[in-house]
Amino acid sequence: MYTQCPSCRTTYRISARQLRIGRGEALCQECQIAFNAITALAENPRDALPGDPRQPVLPVLGATEAVPGTPYERDSARSAVELPSMSAAPAKRYVDWPPDEEAAPAPAWSWASILAWGIGSFMLLGLLAVQVLLFEGDRLVQNPQLRPMLDLACDTLKCALPEFRASQDIRVVSRSLRPTADDDGALEFNLVIANKSSLAQAFPNIRLALTDGGGRPVLARLFTPSDYLPDRDSSLMPVGKPFEIRLLLAKPQRDVVGFEFDLL
View (cartoon, rainbow, N blue to C red):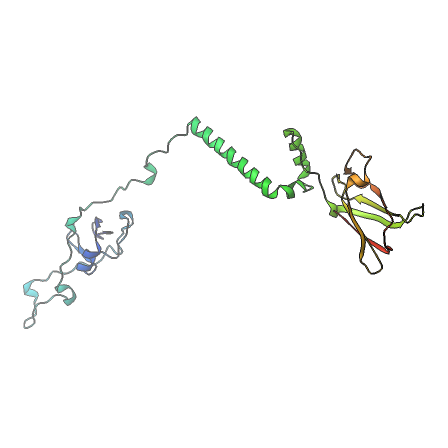
């Protein structure tokens, strides 16, 4: 710890033991005055500032100033102690403390260090991109706002992305289930759908279930685009254009009253 004389501004190093001996007061070796060392106590010599430079000096009384009949005494709190002399630590005036800015200059960057930082940053960015693709790749490639940029990047890198699917943007225009014209008990399921997404997307899978009068399933099957698009080269639904799907079903073993379907 450090303290400073309020008269001559000399900064001293002082210990807790010395403060206890002097009851918080110390004797300056430069100007020989006693002062309160606690008011300017600090951990750093730059912060050791006296609290009151006009602090009174302890009076020195002579024998002629003693009152007759009364023993000459000093303050009882200080009569048993002696003010600590801080001669053990060298006194030093911290007048022109060198500023921190004058420390050693920062080392100059070399081309090798700049190249190493660049390669390291590029590798970290690549690792981050890989992590994003692993954990968020499926969601990102199905985002209609990001998909055009990803398609362009993949065309440049000669890679392939999964088909764009947005079944929630497929609108059902009409659907029906009726017997075929041959009257052989077979059924024909007709479905007209339209792609309302902003991008062309893959034709959906159709899960169709036929039910009886009690709502129990009689027949259920999943139809993929290859089942109802056998002669089409393109597997993408154009935007906004209605498309008709016809599915022929063999005669069920039980009577069919209704049907349910989902686009997947």
